Image 1 (cartoon, rainbow, N blue to C red):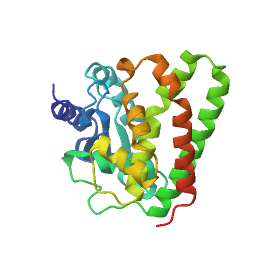
Image 2: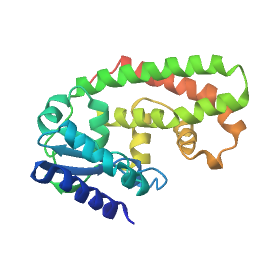
Image 3: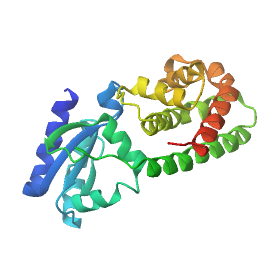
Length: 233
């Protein structure tokens, strides 16, 4: 089943639950960008959302899991409009990757304010930096543990770079190119970023290689934090 066919089955399920209250369904995320092992993620906007609606969705959730559909992000329309400034990174990533499946595109004409985006980037990258430092100490110089730390955090680092690309005004939407655009904007060596990107699919990366990458990776995150901290539009 293609991602669009899978998304349309989700629309059918949601229409049984919400009927005319279903406003829009968008597919977004890694699966539609070619990461086939990732579940398909979707955003569904509804007119209203009650406990009985949640119970109805819970009954069909096992079928969604069987079809490798992630539990959809269900958001009432008015709540969605009021939360764009609260979740600039999350909605920014949906804007970059989304494909309309049902209804109108709620992101037509929507732009995340740059200062909201910058502030959220700063919070997330500094949290990421603290996590890496603490994780390295907890790994106790064991290569396997260090490799796990680097591998498990690679996707979050790549996502941060895509947010920086958006902050810099880049118009590219392809996953790898947007990540590299963010690296260029933050003056991070592309070689390090390509090595980290490879870790998003770690099966082909030896443990020792992932562990040896840590010093360069940490330096890249430190540079990213500095770039965001001193960012000027």
